[in-house]
Image (cartoon, rainbow, N blue to C red; front, side):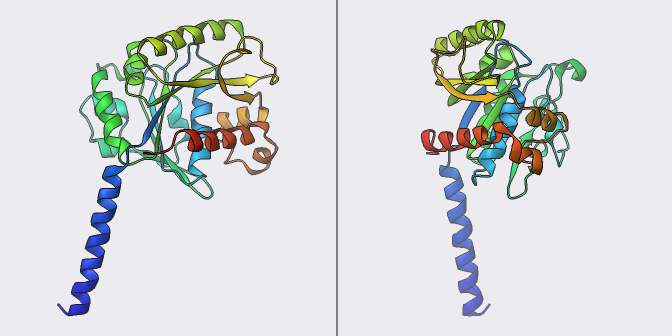
Length: 263
């Protein structure tokens, strides 16, 4: 080897080592999104917030932990070989369960899940902590889409989440269930950052009026249609620009970046 080749090789090696230790130092933030009642648009919130964060230059992973009725897989552009359910059952490796969603100027990643009802095999929920810890050094933000309710598939991941946002709607049944989730979060010492109220008819709330509200996402027909197509509001150009929720998701992302900085 010539001196020039050796010098170039050394620089490249130093660069690789530097990137390695930088990644080792990163501890991505885990944001969990539980809800008391189903049908409040939790997956829609998580996916669109992930898009907004990705468009702000963040490396984002959405982890689907709704083992009853998972929906995150609908948004995948590139499907992985297996799902989280397969991994927890020992059928695939962890690097085989990550899929990708492509935006115009960015991308984010998804770990999909298969319903345990369809899977018809038991999974070890306690291994979820290891999955979360594995991805912490690879992503800036890990957004967890949880199942509705208070099952063990909700309680266990909440214990390993850095910040929690309870998703609800401003109607009495959803409010009452959200209060039960808040009580659970408080009992485990979770860091509740506020409620995200979805499908709001106005900014003047009824049931959550005096509660700590992180964001109000208005009812948005454009968002509903985009979700039905397996797209985020940032994918659809014309209706995306007309969407009243698009600015809300962008503002939510900016608030998270300001308040919940990566260590």
